[in-house]
Image 1 (cartoon, one colour):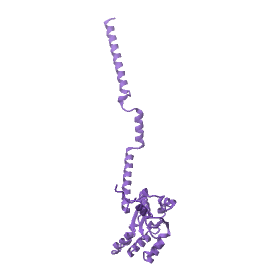
Image 2 (cartoon, helix red, strand yellow):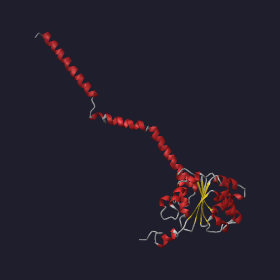
Image 3 (cartoon, one colour):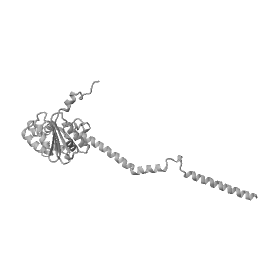
Image 4 (cartoon, one colour):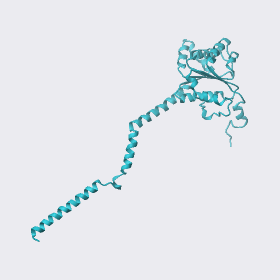
Length: 266
């Protein structure tokens, strides 16, 4: 072989070597192996999830959830519930209220129809607990609730009598979807309280729902408040009302006599 032929062969071998190195580098650059991160199927799956729930939507959902919690807290605080009792600690099988009646009242459909609810019966039979639990359920359903005792209404009348602003105060109260007046009948009702109760029932008549708990049936309210006011109040209250009468022994007394009303010392 001549020197020229040897040089030519050398050049061919160099070109072939460079071509092999180029193919190897290209193959290495585009290969998918452990060092390249997660497999393609995993990336596509992650991308699919992100596509289904875009980040802005997730942020918006979290914002709505936060606002809902804040609004619930505000509604519950404004309602003025006395103890925080709910249906979570209510023993529906121990109550004398029929199960079907309990379920119908819990549905709150009667509130949507602007009907009233009166629960009456002996002390300790669950009237206040059930009524407050209804109020808590209404708040959780997005409704507004206002809670009063009969004497709260008397104080309201006295507070607004000087400037004759009772009508404006009541107009604010009846913006609530459900108004609860608790524990009527334990004591005689003052004239101011009787007036406040009448004014409230009159202002809410066929516009808002009122729930009342009492030791007396509403037909006996004239025994504890002026007869004229009692008659006018009960007439409006019972026109569109569901009346439930509780029976039985006092839950509180039963717990007291069995030692369940307190936590043992040891």
